[in-house]
Length: 348
Image (cartoon, rainbow, N blue to C red):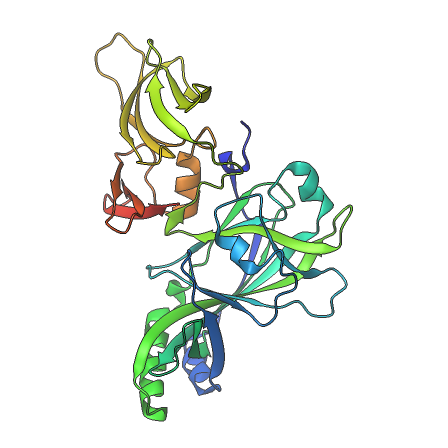
């Protein structure tokens, strides 16, 4: 199956607005911004000032399903609503975006989709007593280094390394906390990095003026991006050990991966039969052969090593990996980065 996750594309162009260090601390003199974040049980917390369409809310951005999308507004809107997203706690971030409808290539071209995006980072503090069952209010200061990017007009995931930390984010964060303590009586209940995304320009749709984005995720996870969720009962290799098959409850077979030049071995399979780690070795009589580890997304019948490399920005291709289920029910992939350190990432 030809799924859009099989190839990831680095964004065509990125414009960096680099601010001198003196300006970073001058930014601390700016006024505080109030950002209300909706608490969710899903992938991340988010916020928009107004939902453009109840049938296509921003929750759809984070559901790991290309059939759904967020309707951000219309081409002729005077001003589009910015989207706020809480970033995972990491050294730095890669944002992965499927701009447009991910249902199929026909609907992709029918809807408008972002061409130019602007990203702003906030260091945010949730004061004690400012939490409800639906969300939390944050006091935030804007980090002065911002990104404007141009997306390619293509039916695919596109990845961008945000690189905020190289511009003095750690020192700025410390200064924000110091300023908060000096100005507010409420204790800090929680802190967060909040990313604001604004749509500045779009590719027009052939049929609709609605501007849509199907998926967003960061480098803390790899989603299935499934457009269907069949019930897989078992997985296995053929007799020649070069073809990886999945089978549903009715006995219908699905080809996941085939490589007649290699010998495959199933190392690990997730409890829901959505993910598997394979070992691939050249079918060679020499005796010594290089071993490559493969991450298979069974639902979409694809090997996602390229997506893992592009989405995380640090995966060392082909190196050992294994799956581990947490008590929470989450599934994590453990892998090695380019410096030989073990890392983990959520599989959704």
